[in-house]
Image (cartoon, rainbow, N blue to C red; front, side, top):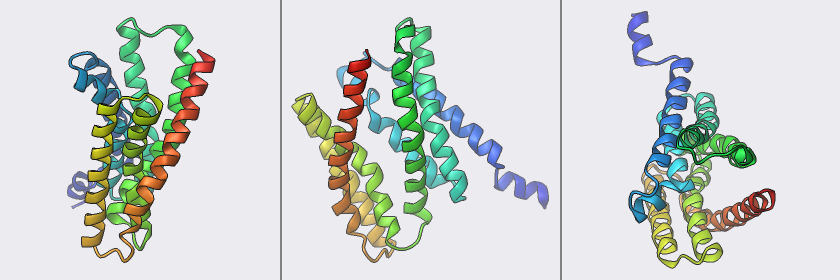
Length: 212
């Protein structure tokens, strides 16, 4: 009976090891897919690509604290996989170490938040589930705003904003079906927090340019 239970419920070490491994592979894959096609390049060179998987990891893990740890470790692991592949590919120099820190440090905090969001949307209670639902959607919307307002890439902005709106709608519908009383908070908070996320990314990228 004990061995059967161990197979059904993996230990925290196994869960965290699998999460870190997946993060490393995700980072490696996003680097490897750069430049293959314009759309694939844009999709892989994207914060949204990483955060969606981090939130999904949080949703798949049953224990809340373990989901938080998994989220916190996955984003830095993804950065590690990306920059390891970049080093092997000969496109990473010693002067870029500051760039690694700038992305890995927010990734640690952001991963913690996304792991919590994924877990809470699926297994939480009360209106907090609707608040958590806005978290992954805000990143996609915020990235869309960056393409629109920061880079003036209209086509890319339209795609990311459309995906962000669809993700917000899907999460809001899921929460409504799950019986969350104030499910509409997801739809309200996602665009507002998306704007805040855009402003935060703008500050981070400005710091990157100043430190380059």
